Image 1 (cartoon, rainbow, N blue to C red):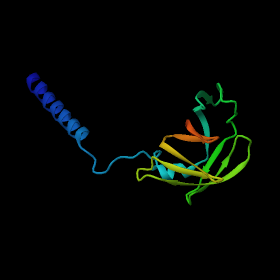
Image 2: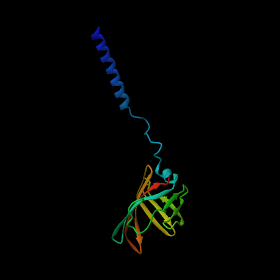
Image 3: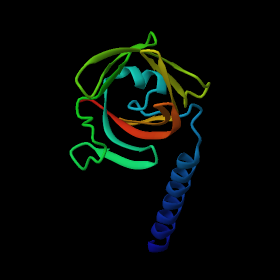
Image 4: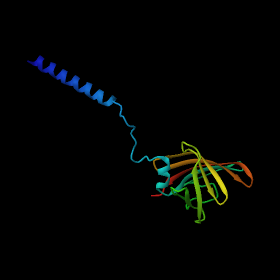
Length: 159
């Protein structure tokens, strides 16, 4: 009798293992996407963004800004905000708390490059990425005619 019970337990356990293995290895017919991860173009216009951290090399000198931390740039970026609208326009609150209108557009099919134009100057945001609450980008800056300046930054969604 005990041998029959042990044999039955082994069979049931084996069937359970096979079932679990088959379920865990079955591919979904549709790729899964988290509700919190929108396509880049939708995530960009969802909320206002503020500078979280920034690194740049201006005239050969490195400086950095970290929200609620060290700032060696000589400029406070605490007020800086970017609001992107789905029609390709937006509003930038600069470091002096002044509102400036801008236009924007993706310049690559994969949406990893963005042209950002305010006044008459266009900055090309390269390595553009949005993951979770963060936007990452890098741009070359032309300052006083010198094109050898670079800025890399991370923006965070304003709560």
